[in-house]
Length: 285
Image (cartoon, rainbow, N blue to C red; front, side, top):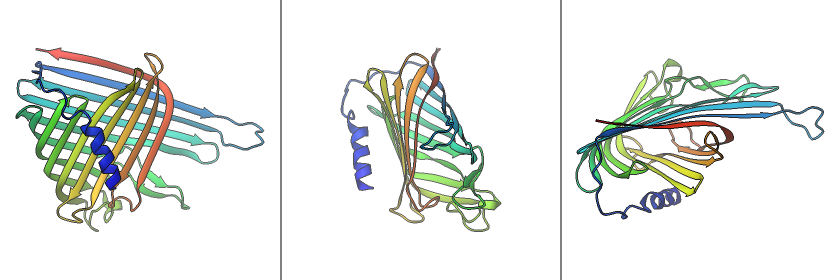
């Protein structure tokens, strides 16, 4: 874990001490929306080496809302996606299922620093199953679990593509339904768990090459009330290759370390070529 945090700290600090001259933000909203659909298909007929017919599709909708006016900075990010694959003999399987809203409200302090207040909510849309056992077993569903976090802190923001927020007193609520009571850190017979801890959140996006973009999203959390010193880590990397205006290839690497949801490191990797629509809008007043 120490190596992971060391590498990530280098990523987020590469331009930390760069530009010294402060730029005054214009009073305006900036909205960036991205819609992406990825489709994969494989078919086999009398194929000697074997194989299963597969159809898969992923839909992702992401929005960034950035507001700047005088000493106020407000960033909100909506991340949502859903994907399914169909295997000829096994039926449908989920490949992606995510709904998340992040918001940071900042009040200018000095230089690139802001007094901040963060809020985060995340859950999923549909039921997830463990297919390794027969019959299959439900392991999660809509709002089970769901996480709500909020708290004051300090935001260092050099640009919309590079920021780091430190929140040493972050409250986090975990919600489950009756079926999953006793799981995800919630006590048996209850539907809610409360924790108070330290939260570190960072965002870094840059161009590896002219048509290749790399996006890094990191969250680290440790609970003061239980298992202090035990870190939950959520780190996602998106690498986008631009073919033309509407065709992009994307690779996603997503790692989660959370003892309350799994004793093992969770890892998700996606790769696909699909249709992409992106737009930018500025509202000045």
